Length: 142
Image (cartoon, rainbow, N blue to C red):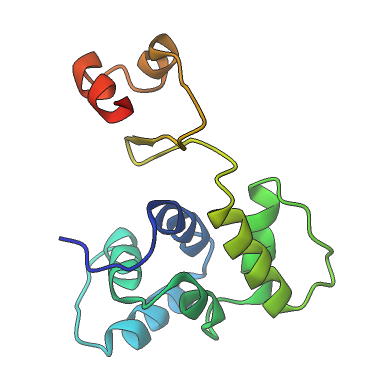
């Protein structure tokens, strides 16, 4: 059971962003966020612990180990244009805007999330995730 207060889109975005961190920074961030109380054995476990124990997306992005360059690179990877000389606080605000904008339906770790105004063709979904059964997908859309 996730204790995370982050929205689904924020969690997905944070996962992508945290994968850009240097390993030392990632594990140091995990220690800070969890008060060193959670032991992890992999990058993935560290990322999940950070997401679970973070109060909110802004608090996580403001952490010292989440460097300005990492946020900039994440936004660039997502196709979000920002000025290269933007301050960290501006990048944080733009990231949170992007996550709350409902700009896209997206796939994250084998789950499909749809924003309410998007309709995705079932055939297309089968191409993305052939392992899922169509009934389950219909349920998710309904």
